[in-house]
Length: 101
Image 1 (cartoon, helix red, strand yellow):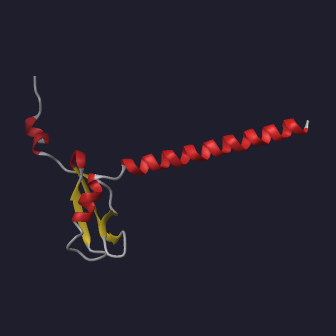
Image 2: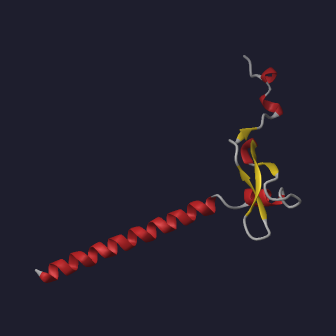
């Protein structure tokens, strides 16, 4: 009976450990998906600005990010979005260029 309790406890600890590792790996991969070229642009637009100064930059899919420059380290600023992402209308979406039959 004691052997059964120890075995169940060991299994529960192993399952809990596996779940914890899985969550950490998933969180890490999600964060990685949000890093990259957009972060480089967000940093670049704040190179000549001061903390809390307005900034904006264009991302992929005709997205416009608007925010303020905030510290990401002691000396480096990044543009942090504080307004909803706006879609930029492209010249090809003009209503006069509708496809007609």
